[in-house]
Structure formats: structure tokens, C-alpha cells
Length: 210
Length: 256
Image (cartoon, rainbow over all chains, first blue to last red; front, top):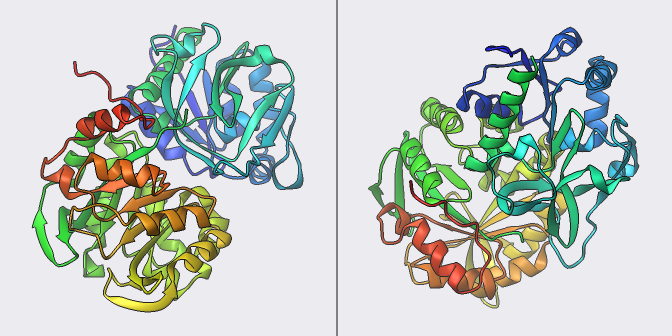
């Protein structure tokens, strides 16, 4: 257990970088925003944030030589948190923009809502129901509300990857968890107290694992 | 279930919150960051800041406000007023705003909507439409409601959404400041014309007006200023009332 673990927020020009940093600061954690693969390699915890398009995300991670270091980091077993696009990037493939290969760290696809009867993006506060226990959701009630903004949703090949689910036209897994990986489709940094609790739980996990 | 959103709006002049009654009479209602924290704790789902500072020399006051708000408030917030270029948008988003709202600048240069959506994503581009009833329809006004444009508001809503706007903030010039209810026919026409969220603005006098905008008006969110700033209703009271009327609301956390 380390008092001051090296917690990295991966910088690939995603719009919510600073918001994630501010939320971490609010729960008492200094995070390092970095695009340096060497920082990812030696991190005690990594957060992959994200707002925007799958193709941009994968292109920028590639340009910055971060794709392989992220895969290696996850394989090392250290704590990893993906947020929004940072969740979608973990799957094999996204249907966004005519199709985009993603990191392939979790089996499955990212699909478009494609509703006629509901507005897209799914924007605003919606409930997340926990499907099992996990340290990332410790102390947060099942059915709590979180802030979502997305037009695509994760469709993992293995339903057991889902840690939480949300209904908007259909019921989709809004939190994925597998071994050392956790990822949320919503934005904890914009979800008030419940969201801050997610970051506090992640920070605690990183501290213990370091 | 996706909830309807309650959004307090702050008109900010030189870093202080003011609210115009029909855009003319201004009264001071406090410090924006303190108000933002208070409303966050009270259960606001989102916040909107409209910077009405006349002089562009004083932009630093709004920059400081945006940054200080982002440091202390962990719900989404939108900044509008004085945003004319993608550089202005980038500045606000980097300071910590989640969305930017453009109004006159979009009418003067509609490509700004496309450019903003392309560079930063539709989710952070809000187009504000101020409109006034004319004949069977509604006309777009710019410059804080002073300048008629001859543009049909519904056609304009469709156009900006096609160009990439992720949300519309629709203010009725006829009802704004009167606290006698939102312009329901306009909201309904607007919401049925587009497939992005519509925020109703102008005319909130209480929860029943908001309920009307969210049901008959088909709005996704309601914005209000005076009734919150002057304590006529708290956000908690509004949410409790709307929940009782069967409208999905994010509940306000219990007080410690």
C-alpha cells in the first residue's frame, strides 16, 4: 500500500481530461495527465477518459504510441478505469463512423442506439442498477443516478462482463468489469456525489494495489 | 429511466449573477460560483451561465468564473454569451465548461455550428434560439432578443441540428420574464421538429409551468432563473412537485 500512488490519466486530447483531474483532486488524489507511454508503463493506476468519436480515439492513441503500452498495462493486472469513450475503446469493435477496430481488451462490440422514438444521444441523468458486488461501486446504492452523453452503447460478447445496467430504449451494460478492468459508460466526473464516490473507490483500490 | 432535467440559469455580468425581466430590468442575485455550489447541493441537474458582459475587455471575469465553477461543481454546465469562434469554444471547454451555447453567432455564421460539432463533438454544442410569435409560427431574434431576423424558428431549429447542434435552448421572447408559463405550442413544435434534446426557457413561474413544458411541450429539460434566485421555489420543491406529477426526476439527496 502506497500513500502517494502514481495515478495516470491518459492524455489523447479527450475533452474531459481536466474534469477527471478535478474530480480526482476533489477526492484528494493528485493525478498525472500524460501522453508518455513510459508513464503508463510504470503507473500504479490508469484512467482512460474520453469524449468524442471512436476513430479519433484510436487514431490518437496510435499516433501517441499508446495502444500497446495500454494493452501491456492491462495485462500486468494493475487497476484500470475507462470512462465513456474509454469504455468503448476496450471492446473489439465499434460500429461508429462505418466501423472501427478498438483495443480488443474485452470481447464484444459497440453499437448505435438508432432509435426513431427516442432522442439520440442518450443525454442526461439515468439510473444504474448493480448486477453484482465490486469495490468500485462500494457504498453507492444500486439505482443511483449518473450523467450520460452517448449515441453508442457497449454490447459485450459475455453478459457476465456487465457490472451495472441502464435502460434507455433497451437495457445495456453501463458498467463493465473484468479482473483489473472497470469501465463506465457514464461520466462519474459529472455525476455529483455518486460519481465522486466512484473515483474515491478507484483511488483507494490503486493505493492498496501499489 | 432517463430523467427530465431542472436547470438553473445564471445571467452573468462582470462576474455577478443578474436576471433581466423581459431582458430590460436587471437585478443582482449573487456570486455565480457560490450559487452553483448551492444549486448542485439542492439537486440541480445541470447549470447554464449566460455571460452578458458588454465589454469584451472583461472576458477574464467569465474565464475565472468558469474555471472556479469547474473546480467546485461536479455536474455538467454550459457557458454562453460572447462565443463567436471555435477558438472561443475551445477556451471555454478547456477552462472546464462541458458545453458552449451560441445564439447570434450561429445566425451570423451558421458554419460555426458545423465547425464546433466537428472539432469538439455535437454533445457540447448547444444552439440557443430566442423566438417570438409571428402569425402561425415563430421568428428568430438575435442580440439578446433585440434584433428580428425574419428566420422561421422551426426551420432554423432543423437546420442547426442538421449542422451538428447537440441540444437546443429555446427561449420565448413573449413569455420570458413574466413567470406566467412557457410557450407550450412553440416548445412542442420545436421538440417534434428535431431529434436532439430541447431545453425550455422563458416564463417559469413555478413547478406546474415546468410540468406543462415537459409533458405538453415535450421538452427534455426546463431552465429557470428568477424563481430560483429569489427563492420563490427551491429546486428540491420543484423536483418533489414534478415527481408527484409522475415526471421522472433525479431525486435530491437527503440533507445531512
